[in-house]
Image (cartoon, rainbow, N blue to C red):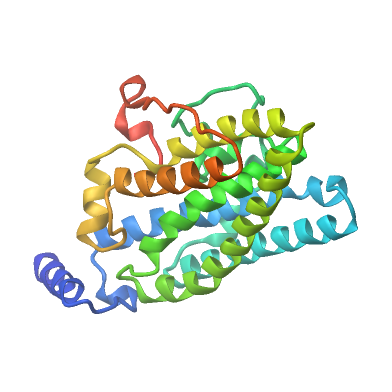
Length: 275
């Protein structure tokens, strides 16, 4: 079948709300964009799991050590699921992970500000470059980044690639548990006289970093993802939904979110993540 005919047929199926189930139904452009997005998620899940590992030992109390261990297990499971989907599309998963495994553990200085830059050859969302140095960091990462990921996964739950949409159902439930864990501890830290100021400062740090993950408004890449129903909303729509939710939940426990200034004019679009 000619490429143009295959594209027409693919777009017709997507317009009719049908799922794409096999590589044979895909154009090369559809497959390339799908693989890119799924690799971003897979690498992020793996990098997240690696970043949480030290907190199994450092978490306050046996119960929390168990919770952190469960979160690590969840993240590695999510990575395994995503890499499995990529393998089904012909990706060399073992080669990819072997090439990037050491890099995915790398963290930058806690006071660094890389905006929306990606600084290594893996595809993780760039918030996973930042270290988790304190218990408050761990909590507000759950509260902010896991919530941000949840807003992005909302689109995936209704995406055109059937295997990915189905896999997200279980992942989404586990991410919701991580978010609830963050909310429980945010309330404790925010309402504690000795921990309130640390909670406020840590929220500000991770809120800004999470706001940077959603990508540039109106990007050409995002428009392409929406054309193929790999995403449903513009980057700024997802960011706005996240920001409104965090603002409400933070205010409920006496915290405020900082002003966020976009950095789109600092670097070219092709260097930013995610599209």
